[in-house]
Length: 140
Image 1 (cartoon, rainbow, N blue to C red):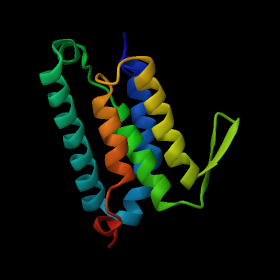
Image 2 (image 1 turned 90 degrees about the vertical axis):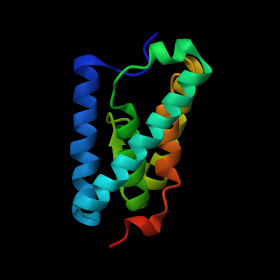
Image 3 (image 1 turned 60 degrees about the vertical axis):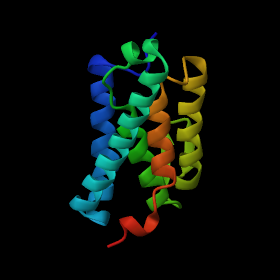
């Protein structure tokens, strides 16, 4: 049971998210703030993974390296920074920044329910961390 796309597909999706969303946030926030945000979110996901590993041996053995957590965090951060901007997903769905936050959390939560919420703890923590990250920490 896979938790997130791994291998070449996971790498491509992670790099695309970092390029698109991180690339638009860096000029607005500055490299230091963006780096601090990313490190804090990834560490929070790591703590969630460690706690999940303490709860279940199966979870510990099943964690895989992937970029879903940082991708979700950057998407949510971008959506919070640009709430009135729109993004088109696969040519089918147009979402504003405000809608994108809920959509991203919803997709991650549905995937967690469909697979195993314990295995998705890092991604869920990244979503919550980005959604509730203090706006004051991101201003110049």
